Length: 223
Length: 143
Image 1 (cartoon, rainbow over the protein chains, first blue to last red):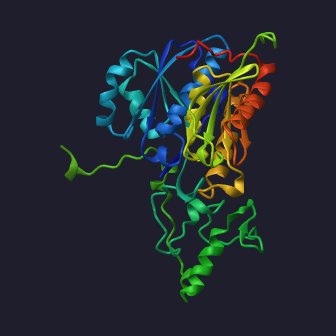
Image 2 (image 1 turned 180 degrees about the vertical axis):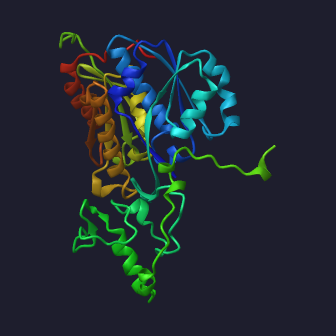
């Protein structure tokens, strides 16, 4: 899922200060799963912001809503009447949903309520860890299903490096497993350690976010 | 500015776990007057039914303080419910602090085999904690 985290409360209060009526919109998909922007979080943040703004003497009316998916235009349409009566919108969706919302209401002040942080897995209750970097040239077939691009601090394709701890953790944190250590262990368990010695063609980074804005086109699906 | 201590009668909402009650105590929901405060008792099937947004809403509605009454950590009928409730309450206190509000308005008390009188006394403990803060400044401001 796409994960996000609330921006610091003082930053959010600062955005809304001076506005009269604000629509706070959540998204019931990825950001709900990571407890940042679902209905519960919207209904927690709205009273908190109302109280903080009222306490400093600049009360703001905040109305709330949660879309099924903020990144799909058809789910935004039912909120058009509500949006037309506000002077600002704050979104708790990921950066994708936020931008679609801002595009739909270009005349209304728009603010992000969260920072979009990663493509992660809910590893355990209350713990999300990165699994994908959307690098555009997947290597999982060569690394036994473990991603070194997103899970190695250096995105090494020829690890492990010298920073692996004897415990098997990465030098950046005891809580971060060295993914190359896990790759080697899995290769050994399958009796295929020699596969890691194979010379790989250079990775195509031009299809990654570093290659510029992505535009994916499928003519067969076009109107 | 805080109201004079002798005039300020804190209004405390108490969310209490049904399992905390003594076997012979009759579950009760509603207002119970205390010495210098008023308690509004709300019965929960387990303290973990309390969500962070419930706490925010109760404060926004003007309660001067909120006391969550939960079972001891190791005596929760749902094993981890009481522990979860404690963590949620601590998280909510952190949010209030970040927002420049008073985390002391939220509190947690634990007990077992409680009478309604002892639950009301726990509300009194919260009332004493919020008395120095004065009335909830949001009373009547937020909707």
